[in-house]
Amino acid sequence: MKVLRLRNLQRSHPPYSAWLRRAAITLVEEHLKWADYDLGIYLVTPGRIRKLNEQYLRHEGDTDVISFPYSTNAADIRAGEIFICVEVALRHARRYRVSMPVELLRYVVHGLLHLEGYDDIHPAERRRMKHIENRLLRALLRRHPAPVKLKNSSNP
Image (cartoon, rainbow, N blue to C red; front, side, top):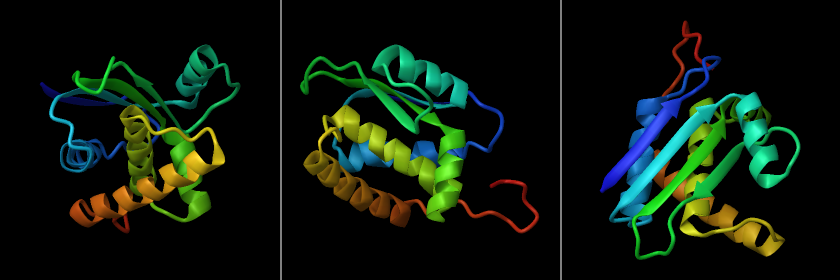
């Protein structure tokens, strides 16, 4: 089974859904080498991510990305959900001077690495995960260049 659902559950910003989905499938199949998967990636509002963050992680406020793994072991089908706050992605894209699609793709990579079993709680783990995240992001952008904003476009 190879299922990857990408749903835009917010209306404030363009989701770049088709491009993100293609890049996510490349990551899952070619880089992480998952044979079978059932994944949901959801682009959400700050209110939705805040509720998830407080209800499941016991953290206050919004955040950029939250992953929920549903697989019981590595031999099973890889299953999970990733929730990405588009508004936080836009803030971070502006802060780090990258495009909105690139920042969204970074969160897809980050979320999938969590589903792969990587953690970023401790500094050494965080550095290792960030290094892998950056390497994968560069590889994906070579294969799937980010959509560019046209001069008269209202897309951020």
